[in-house]
Length: 212
Image (cartoon, rainbow, N blue to C red; front, side, top):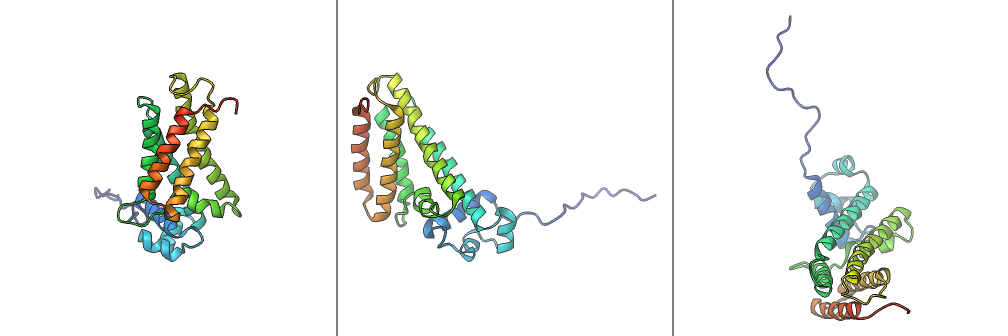
């Protein structure tokens, strides 16, 4: 009879020597700097500290990794918007929290203005990549819905005109967000873009879109 060992069993395979969330964040930064086409597998390996086999094993190929990065960005953006668009805050203040948060993302401390990861990288790839196009559309509609929900509450609470159209206002609010993203990459200053956001919020909160 063989005596059963009391020593713990060794786990099969090599343990993961990386943090998946951190690695995906590092890969996102690499794509953000150079775009999808301009980011090589060597760039991704350098950014994440993982060799190619490890990258493939963890995330699949470069395309799958990029789609994961887009999904991560969209999810984080929606959570940030939900927090900023607090129903307990006046509408102008809630909207400016969204735009200030976005500007903080577009203008990283001590770094070059980078704009929006989704807009600046996916818009180009969407021309020829159906999966990226779906991700881009999903992201834009996700942000639209967050704005629309807040405008619906604002209308119910008489913060905006009773004949205002929350869906239309939401698309305008999103368009302002996209403009800030693009102009940050084009060289506009953060101060100038914040002034643009303030002007946009004034229009959104004071103008009825009903009957237009």
